[in-house]
Length: 340
Image (cartoon, rainbow, N blue to C red; front, side):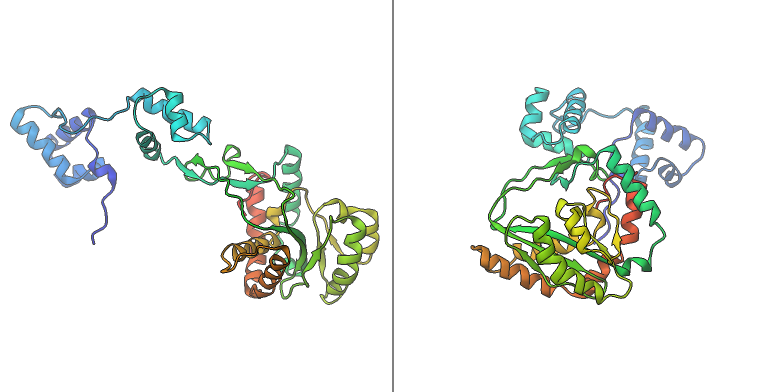
């Protein structure tokens, strides 16, 4: 099947474009040369010259097709409304503009400028201070390569029964995925589920710890640090332990329990810089596509444990290999969202 030609080759020549065709042809240029100069199809250039030679005019004949339902002014207002109100539906945009065209026509006008409905990227709100500290943290480690293989990344995650059917779409152009008005702040709620803690290293992973109650500092020490973190870190030569700045992690009792362990400072609100977040995503996708979705918390817990154990270590190593790119993306975006 031949490749499709560019759409621009089939668009109508403007009055100025037709004048250029005539001028270049009278100047001795071939149809092919003129087509290449104007970025048009050779047959379009040829037909324009033939019409000029035969009729003495190059003006476009009245079109026989159905005229466009929206005026240029309505077209501009549709675009502006969609950009200024990213979550507006086609019906809401139609009502705001006051046009009489159908919702389908509104959607088609938005597709003309590549404004497509997409699910917004979930994000954690960042203040200018957060961005500054994130950028500084990344700049201090911008040259790290093999050093990341010594870091043990840890985190908690919660997996819930069922899935939310709420879905908000935004309209955006290519390249606008991480713009602030195209993002959706992420919130969590007390729905039935299981909270787990885990840690990954370049060559291994910890046992997965189920957190039975709300995690506090004492529980963190007794369930996680003493039985899991300390033995796991002692097995890794030169290991550096990473944890976020949650209160149970930064409490004095937790800090005392971690004495003697090299801790990696961590910028606030930076889950996108930690590869373990993608491990939780992998588990979440496995649960979503599980042939027997869990209906009870014990079954869900068993499925999470199975998914944790089944992740190939090569996948975790690949996530480690993205650390340099993560930091570079954060630096280039002035400490903002990285897209990871």
